[in-house]
Amino acid sequence: GICHTYVLHPPAGIVGGDDLRMTFDLETGAQALVTTPAATRWYFSKGIEARLDQHATVADGATLEWLPQETLVLTGAHARLATRIDLLGAARFCGWEVLGLGRPACDEPFRDGRIDFRFEVARDGQPLLLERLRGGATGLPGLRGHAACGTFMATGADPAIVAAARAALAALPASLAGVTLIGDLLVARALASHCEPLMRTFKALWSALRPLLLGRVAVPPRIWHT
Image 1 (cartoon, rainbow, N blue to C red):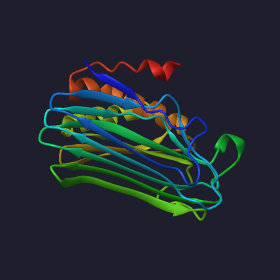
Image 2 (image 1 turned 135 degrees about the vertical axis):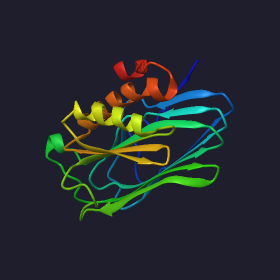
Image 3 (image 1 turned 30 degrees about the horizontal axis):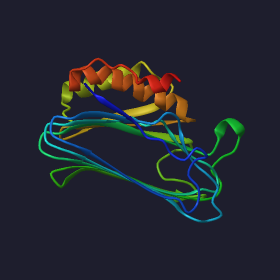
């Protein structure tokens, strides 16, 4: 079966001065799904940086699904998040990251603070994807005025998988999304006014692609319903 792992951050969220480091090691043949029970929140920090480093090593023949709930960066936070997925041999990976800025529902934009987010996927030491989003109160590049952005990634893709992904996205017009194929890595990027449409979009994309890529029906983790 698949090992479901729930990452629990401090109950009050991540604040200035926090330095969290997590490692995940999947042995040959292992199958794991990593998620969080709720959104991860980064709070006002008076200019003090908070840091979270996440590193997963996926052995040949193992499969990692990386499906955290959204990351919310509130105004005044100084957040540094680095995630690296190292795939070995024929290891497989499917996952997403969703970032929300400020609290749009409360009319509280991200006015002050600093963000440095990185997401890297490599196979046998060779980079497949190097993502970095860095900016501050003056704005973040590429968001086109939106307060939420996300990236969905899956290895083992081909043009038929890309077509299936685009069909799934076409049925969900609440977010602005596009799909790219880099080698065998599918990369879907999306923008929205807040995180909820992106989470709906990526969960639907996972549901459509999981049977095609991993040979398993997409059954949402029970923690998502609590």
